[in-house]
Image 1 (tube, rainbow, N blue to C red):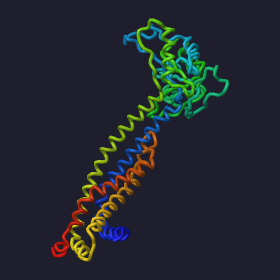
Image 2: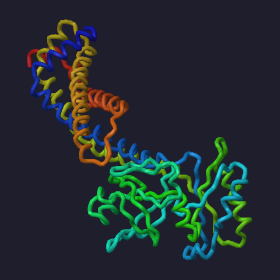
Image 3: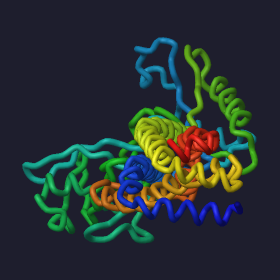
Image 4: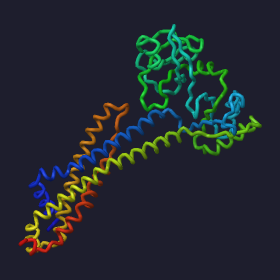
Length: 393
């Protein structure tokens, strides 16, 4: 019998037991849809992390110092000086260098904001090169770098003014200096690494940090240069400029942070998807059970087909095709349900789930494999059935 006839016969057989086939597919549908939802959430989370770090330059590294005595005060050791960025620009492979008051390249400065009797503590960053989500007011314009202006985060605005909209145009005091609020940011994403930070001009931030010890340096590497080799040159230059320090200058690559986050998220997603996929095993057991029932009910049919010349291979293929059809149909329905459930769950998440072609292809292949693995034994038993005993028993 040709493959087309075997497929046609399998479809007729499955259509004659629609309810039983559908109940068998439920386990496959639940398993596939659960895996699709978990993978889409994991992909969405990775995309959100990448979005949070998209302003991190690919050629940027952060150089920091760790003393041998972990309890030592870095402000007393002074591993960096104001002149270091100037001299590091002369190092081969360095495009530019600048002081960073943040940790591991996250360039923030804390400040105390007051408005009459209300106050709040904020993280301050400069707006240069940043993509800011303005909800009320406006962002900075060209030529305003020397002005004392601020784009306030929504949490601080609500703390000081009870309403973000009321903050526009007001004067607030930061460390004794008055700044005018020109804009208020929208609510920060739950997975944003910058969190609730406010923005001031670069010159204002430099003035604010003029008396603050440098905790690390942001160094921009020239395109095509090896980061590790350039860092060795930077380290040697810093050791010469700051002799006698007991400790090490170390490299922190922001891109490595992104890759580490992606690796962690990918591992957690794969583990949860694997645990969720246990329902596929349960669904496979259901497929095997229903195929055994089908073989038992159709013993006479099998015997007659064998008696008129059907080969064991044809019998095996027919039952195997039936099992694959059940799991594939369940898999396709599971993919559709997973897409719908993912969209619904995305409404309650701070990021959108991301569905990929790879997830759909993987789910389809998994469905076929489940059908083959759990349908092969009943199919073999049917092909080995004695035709005479099958007809008269």
